[in-house]
Image 1 (cartoon, rainbow, N blue to C red):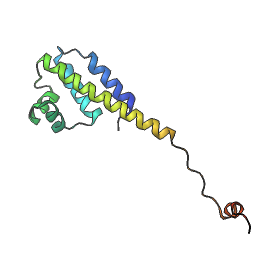
Image 2: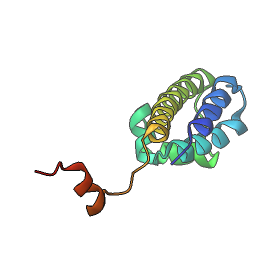
Image 3: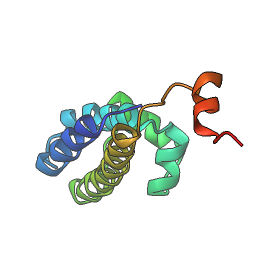
Image 4: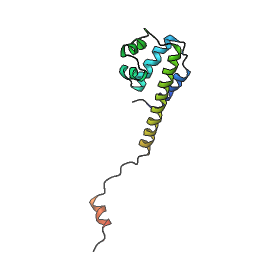
Length: 116
């Protein structure tokens, strides 16, 4: 599972990405898919394209037009930010959980019950 920091770093990369750079698109798409744990099918559904199209994008054999890339970067960046918030909240909850204490022994239990 990705950490909140790795997800935030990905979101920053996507925000700063040059939509005119064809070579960077495949690299960023692959990094996004790995960090966000998205399959080619997940990506194809997100952007309403076929799975083979996503495969061509990831292999650098095709790229969408720059205005479309901007939308892809925006949507992947939003997903990365949303997941970063969720992971961060989960990490905070895990850190706030109290440590488990020892079970009460029979001797301690006897001392807690008043003698009649």
